[in-house]
Structures are given as structure tokens and as C-alpha cells.
Image 1 (spheres, helix red, strand yellow):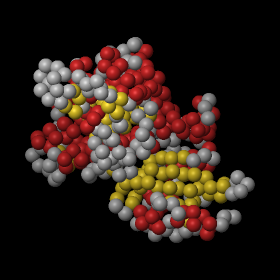
Image 2 (tube, helix red, strand yellow; image 1 turned 30 degrees about the vertical axis):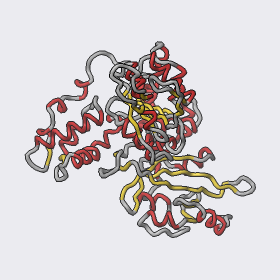
Image 3 (tube, rainbow, N blue to C red; image 1 turned 90 degrees about the horizontal axis):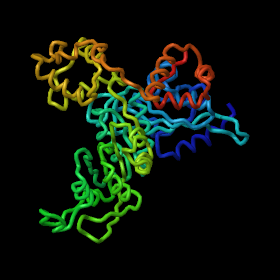
Image 4 (cartoon, helix red, strand yellow; image 1 turned 135 degrees about the vertical axis):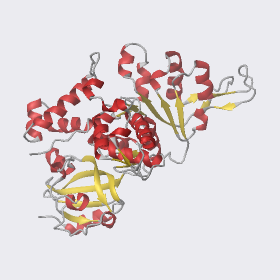
Length: 436
């Protein structure tokens, strides 16, 4: 290997995050102390592999159920970034991995620089973390959160009711430079126009009947922090104009005041509705949509992350004070087959109800609500449910990768797209193509 390791090592040591230099065969040739301190396994340069250190695996990540950033770098010759579940000194942890090719003066790839950043707002196991899970679709969401959070870009969270949009919004805030400032939630559902203005912008004494004193608006309270508009799709058209003016000009007037005030906040919005369809119907302003959807993030339904149910159940049991209780294997099997239209919120209710009904420490199927034992085919029967193009694409890709026996390059060729586009689509839907 024609690499000056001393120069590479100096470069690694200067990085303020855990970092390693690896060759195309996955062998670690340079490592900084921060990386060594992250893992239990002793790292022997020139011998240890990245996957043995971080995963305790005998094979690369893409042969063990996760995307491999090195494999993608080798394929595209471009930097890549993924979220992995690593075996660290503190236990299983989600880590944001950034991989970049290292080239010599002639443009030849010498190896790859891997930089690690632990994700503190989520965990693959029950505990104190706000977001719990390890499914591919969940890790894909974490990747998007990690990319968006440090910036000040407006984020739009899209997902079914009960998928944890407020928790994700709070995670974005806590991972931003505004984390020491307020996080203010504005519930958009049911707000009248007058109440909307008063709640957002505040009012002066005597501005309307009952305004016996001046009141600060939530925009003022959130100064320097983050404002979370929950169910932004429920804001009527008449109020959308006022919200757009605030976002475009950065100024507003309290009700009953002639004085303009300046606003400084990070915008995060959430909705369970398809805003693009509402725009097409004329029910949501297109200019407002593009103002709030700077960085859309899709939250997976619980049906898309069934493998996270045991960890979520453990989390909810602990939060409800039932630390000694656990779901037995049969009960977890019932939960994994249920459709959960109410998503995580419904699972929390089911968990707490089952814990109260169980007579000992083991929660069995008999302790679960009776409707959970109905076959899923019967739960989802009824009128035809139309799918969006994105849902259809996700379902098709999920089906095709489970049956395709070939390389990512071959599959991309069959689909008529580039390998890079294929990887991007797989990441978008939290899917993994394992080499056989």
C-alpha cells in the first residue's frame, strides 16, 4: 500500500471527532484516540477491520443487514453518510457515519476516511432517549434529522397521526445551535383567526373585549429558539396569509399595536395531511408550502418498523412505572402482526392497558385488548385504499430487493436508473439491499 501512514495519522489526530482511515479491504490503518475511546475492542492498525470493531461482526455491514458507506463510496467514488447501530463502550448506540475517499496527487484512491458522530437524541434500546428504535426506516429518519438539525433550514415533518412528530421536532431543536433557547409548540387545529393572531403575535391592553392587559405572543416567547407548528395543514387559508407574511418578512404586529416587532426563530412544522394535494386543490397556499418545506422528513409508521415494537414496549412500561413487567414471546408476536392505525401513540396505550390487566410480571396475549388478535387481513378490509406514487414505489422496491439475486449495479441497470439513484431511493425508504 503506497500510503504515507504518518501523514494520514496526523490528519486523523487533528479531527475533533472519532475517526479512522481504512483501505478498500475494510482494514483500519490509522485511528485517533477519540475513536479508540468509543469502543471496547482493542484496535490493531493494519489488522483490525472497521466492522469487527464497531459491530463485532465477522462480515462487512452490507452483508449483515445495514448499508455499508465504504461499499457505496467504492461504487460512486463520492462521500457517503449513513446511520448505523454500533457496539460502543456504553452499549448499543446510533452513530452517524460519514465516509470520504482519500486520494493521492494523481486522483488515485488510497483509502477512506470515516468520521463518527454519536446520535444522542435516539437509542436502539429502551432507556432515557427520546426516540427509540433500530429499524432501517427509523435509522433513515435519524439520518435526515442529523443532517437537518445543525442548519437553520425550515423542516416539515410528514407522517401518520401518532408517529411521534413532536418528539422528532424536539430532537431537532435539542440538536441545533438554538437548544438553549425556548421550544414553543403551537397547536394549529381548532384555532380561530382572532385566536391565531392573539396566540402568535400577542396583544395590547384593550385590543379587544376582555384584553385587560397586554400579553406576549408565542412568537415573542420563542425568540432565539424553535417554533413547532403542529398540524400546519389545518391552518385556514385566511390565516395562512398572515403566517406567510411573518415567515417572509420576519416581522409582525401584536393585535392592537402599530409597532412592528422582529422575529428570530427556527421553524419546524408537522402534518399528517398530504400538503401537495391540498395545494393542488387550492386548500393550502403554494408559496407557504415552499416556505415551510425546506427540508421534508418522512416519519415511518409503526407498520414500517415492526421490529422496534419490543424496545418501544420496554420504554413505555418503564415510563408508566412497570419496570418489572415484560411482554412474553407470544404477546410480542401478536403485537407485531397488528396494523396499529394509531401508530406509536396506540402502542403506548395498549402497553399500559396490558400492564394493568396482567396479574404477574409476564404479559401474555390474554392481557392484550381483544381487537389485537383479529387477523390483519380483516383489520385492513374495507374500501379500496389508494396509494400515493411514493407509497407504490416503496412497496415495489421492498418487494423487488427481497427477491433480487444480484449486485446493486445489476439491479439499477434492470430498473433503468443509476446506482447512485438506487441507493438514494433505498435510503429514502429505509430499505437495504444485501449482497448475496
